[in-house]
Amino acid sequence: MTAFEDRSLAALFPTASEIPESVRVRPVDHPPTLLVDGKIRTAETDDLRLPVYSRVAVRDGDTLAPVLLGYEPKVGTQEADEAIEASDRAFARGTGEWPTASLEARCAAVDKFAQRLGAETETIARLLMWEIGKPIASARAEVTRSIE
Image 1 (cartoon, rainbow, N blue to C red):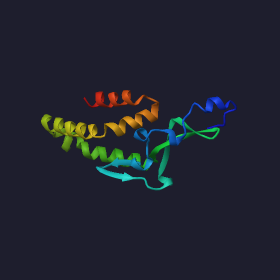
Image 2 (image 1 turned 45 degrees about the vertical axis):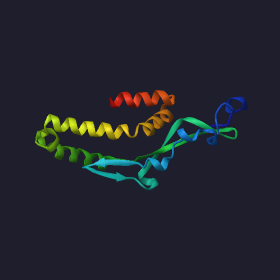
Image 3 (image 1 turned 90 degrees about the horizontal axis):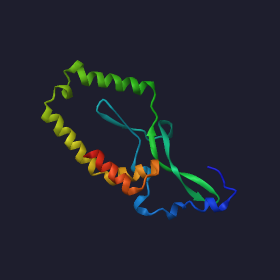
Image 4 (image 1 turned 135 degrees about the vertical axis):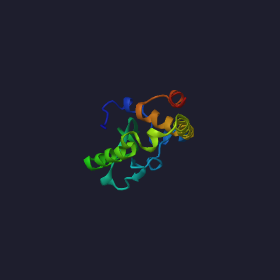
């Protein structure tokens, strides 16, 4: 970001060390992953990932710096084609495992997913807070509401 001519405005922003530990984000906790054909791929090198920054900044002297939240995988047409082909195979014109599963089996799978998501409420809420500037209590409520 840029240096401020009016130092009083820059002074309104916290430094990285002033952010409470309970709401800090560590990019290494969120590796960039891509799920294709039932397999999770992790983009471990810079040429395979793109940085994701918060719109919330921290003060570094007279400059504001965006907070690095993590990375997203860099995908192109090859990965998109692989994902489309994998989903086509999985659906199998309506004869695949998921479309032919019973209602009870699908409900159980969704419930299991919701439980696992619930265990990550704090992490998800913290990322929401940084991504869109939402108060942490509101972010927690949104995650809980979405799971319910």
